[in-house]
Image (tube, rainbow, N blue to C red):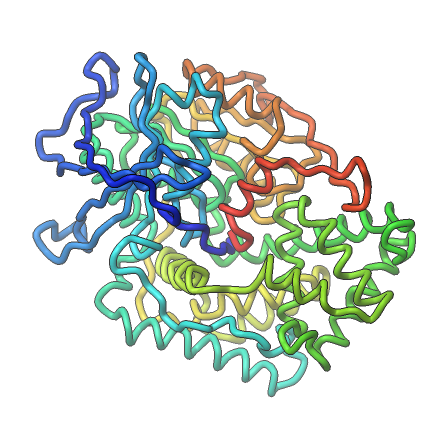
Length: 525
């Protein structure tokens, strides 16, 4: 599961002010103030897009088994409820691991129907080590500075260069954060969530997570089943493949989505003039990749950076018109400028991205065991590459620090659960980042859950991005807890939104909500 860090809360601070946390309405069945809860002091931190945001901080133990030991600080955000009917806190998470949730609270609150959002305190948080939480990890600033070695290790020298990058990143994390790394993991983050629940004075929480946030939510529900009131999981991690096998499964799915992009370009040959045969267009893409391996565009976009630039198209088809234009300009006009621009817009990694990747590796490498023998990685990834070359080695190097990680590993959590109230799951059939099977698996493991499928959908993160059918199920559940019951593999099916049109078309349109969501979810998640 790959993820770029999202935008942080408070970029445009409004008026200073403080608020004391109000315990959840005692009339709500889930809401009982905790005697031991820390007091939260809320300050206005609204942005132009989300003016009602408030921010606070909460100290939690670095090691929850030693509550009197070293403390760390979590950054929280809130869009407070405004309705008379109050349904308690709704914690939200955009995934990653490594994604910031501060601004995400504003997005969720503004995306839900007003009458629904008004009944909840929508709570965002930067998980431990992320963004404005302290300490925030940055193992090796500039790790993704272009131009990197070609991701495909076609020679011993290329493989050695990539291995050195992976080893040096893992070693840098170990040097800088030796005392912290053993506590950067999903279970620790889940215990932080329960500390947030207590600080909010709530007996139970509602939770809404995307991507890796679905695993975070499922693990919370396993450890604290009686503290869960409502649980929404969108674009679902397969918990039985955490994390090595899940990443291999991604490679096949991303290859399929890349080919879907090639087919879409073929459909609009009058615009892009790259041909009408998807396979020949794909061959032109790989020829472009080979050329960039020899001569990077603008001194920035080599073969690996080209993959980085097109991987976001596997997450969100709203990027397809921009990627197609850059592809066509390079091939047809020998103009690399749009390609460099696309790289800077979709793939370049800044300081928040460095932080996000540091957490991504720290969590995934700690959460579960990874092969420590590089020969296993070689065999598995060359096998994948033969069938699905688009992202196979790029993804392998992204995760390769786990082969050399300086901490031991935990065991994945068996999230099977029969103690929960009704749970609502959302999954697109052609999702690349969290393939469809993950949604089916979690539907089976969470007794009483309901699965809503977006048939033919290929985007990652599907609710609150323009599909009214999906959003109706979400709103109904958050309003009164009702879920669809179909009795089969899926309990309800919604038709996918149509693919976008070329930018030059008068009919060109992508959901503004969809674009906003995918900026926050990022493109490595």
